Image 1: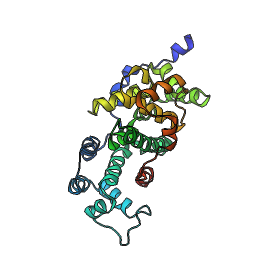
Image 2 (image 1 turned 90 degrees about the horizontal axis):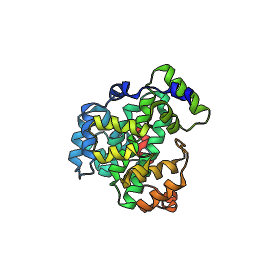
Image 3 (image 1 turned 90 degrees about the vertical axis):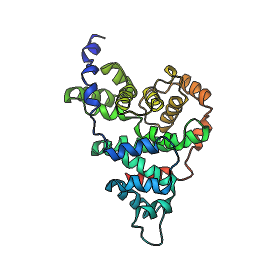
Image 4 (image 1 turned 135 degrees about the horizontal axis):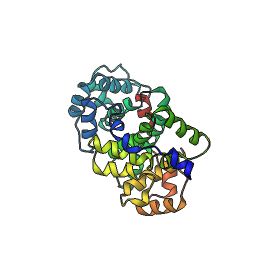
Length: 272
């Protein structure tokens, strides 16, 4: 116990640094605020957002010309891309393009892949259960592990301790509690709060590994999606699973058949 206490790293000294993770440009912030809210958008609205940033525009045109859509003629204009793909798919592409810069480092590829999988699961489960809109679920899935991203920015010695414990079989959420006194959900919530994300998204991220501490059905939904993803960031708790299933109405059968009719994961992977 004394050894564990000596390992404890002062989280308070890091909070301001974590809030300065690579943040998206102003255009990306506008995309998240507009599209993440689930409000209706016309082709012209999405075109205007994408046209304000070359990366956003490039992502849309890239996906529209990909084998997923296979257009007869090459698409070169934003409006054509949005109209051909449909506004629902275009919204997904822009949200992913807005969040992707956070995971720019090659060493974070696995975390980004997991976030894409969670985006699809949360979008699909949110729609099926009525708990969250497809865009809200997609956004929560993309950013739910931003706290894990923050952990990777820790000073070398502390990150080495973290990595050693994880490599020897201790679940990351447990290691975080030992070293920082909180898990990456709470760390991520603090970051998203400073970035002015909606309170419902912040709460869902904060408690996605401790769903019993929140009355948010979205937090319970994310917990179930996290469990089903199989990443093993935490030890599975069948008490939590039953409670979350009861609160959300999402059964194991629902998880097993969860999929996005619009092949959201394929679309998002094209952006990656």
